[in-house]
Length: 171
Image (cartoon, rainbow, N blue to C red):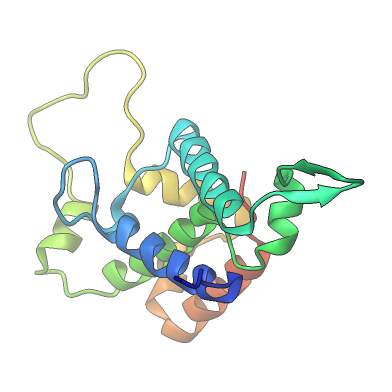
């Protein structure tokens, strides 16, 4: 007879699977670091819904007054003490930003981040959100000013990342 894994076995497994799904873009099957994703509110909601669905399967229903019911979102948040998937992605983006800004000017990643296309104007209408706009919005919400100069100092940027981990909460 097979023994089912305990709750303590499932949560670390969930964390590993979560990281694998974040590292590999399952839509296209190619490696795509989550640090490079632009998170729209629609994608954030989809990720949070997916995460809660998995956590509900891990924690299972609750028996209350002789009746079984599923866990509410608030109950899941209190039980699952780790940061949610969206917060993890936003913090990893901030870490990646610091790394890219400190890179040598000849690196292609830095050229792409700071470069602009020549001879072509952006189309009319509302433009798609760029990665840097999304990250700057996160920094603005955290109250970080003059982030370009702060990224050059590794210790100062590390303290900003620690503050972000403490302040950031999911949608």
